[in-house]
Length: 327
Figure 1: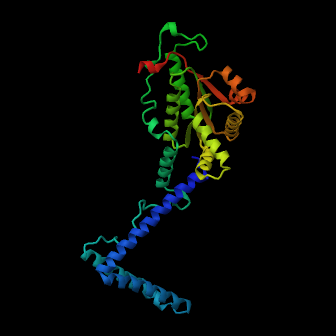
Figure 2: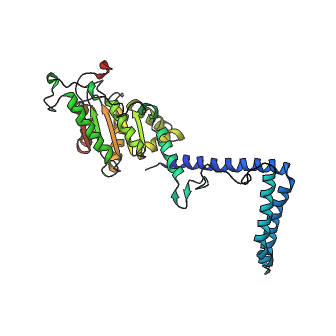
Figure 3: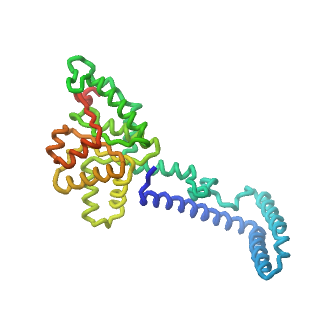
């Protein structure tokens, strides 16, 4: 799982806040007990002072106090627990209470990420994927291939199948894409007329990849270039836009929906090529949906970008009638 520096900083800040909260709540409980049971405060002060005195004596060559220190501290601690119990408190009332006792809210056990840290990563990437709510409804669990025609008169001679057979083939391709995501990352370009389910398929892909604990970012072309223009215009000075640009280039799967709907100009064309090319170089997967045919992509974006698509992307064509009319 690949995280940007910004995402990692967000997670570590959250774990810092957990520890600060645990300490604050302990301080409140301690103040409460000290006010109710002054002897507990005396015990804590005695434990602290005896530990310090024993340490000082040891530094001066006299370790006699150290020999009796453990027994003395144990006796004081037992008295403290008894006082807490007699006053209706749990034995651990004056200990820090962490959300995760395994790592004590540090996120790590030694140098290895704790399970709670891995869960926090999953939650973060779902939140930052831009489509958390959408993919809860649009995924292969709600996929309905019966919306595609299997009539002979709708047979496509180029693909040599009906829309129904084609969508089943596409589902198999997408299953292979998601199953082999770790070992054989690929890029997909899904194209076809309006209303054939291209965005639904990209959401299905996002759902599967996110649930396998990989980072996913989703953008329509409009939102993508809007973010990039703000990033460039503000000269990298706006933290939110900077982090979005960072995530765009480091996420394990980038989805660009509805390519071709943007107002094309030198800025959008150069930025698009930069994104596509950099992610190819870094072997990071990208999925693109568009209403444009391959010929239209060539005419609109030119040979340089089109050649990258042809060499590095698997083209997936959707055929048939607008399925939205059947819903």
